[in-house]
Image (cartoon, rainbow, N blue to C red; front, side, top):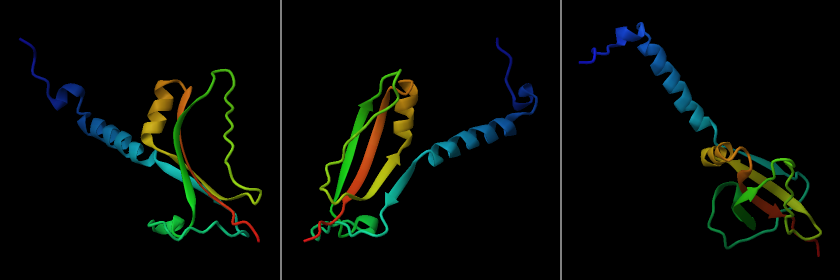
Length: 124
């Protein structure tokens, strides 16, 4: 018969284990973030038909959600955004916990990329 395990069998370190588990759980929530880079002196391409609210309200935006494969030797990846000659108004890059987990499990070879971009309104 196995001995009964009590919190005292761990040297009274049960509160420490709870603290470590809580810290790990909280770090999972903070691993989701987004970075948005926007132009200050240009006008975004308008889109009145969108039903979104917030930053992208009345702006024509495009979302790219894909998994890219990066070689182990060369960690460089280029994606050309198809805007007109006027250029980009804003780009948002989102990182989620699932994307971080995929990158960790594949040793950085596969990465989940979620981009949202808005092009600049062309001048007439």
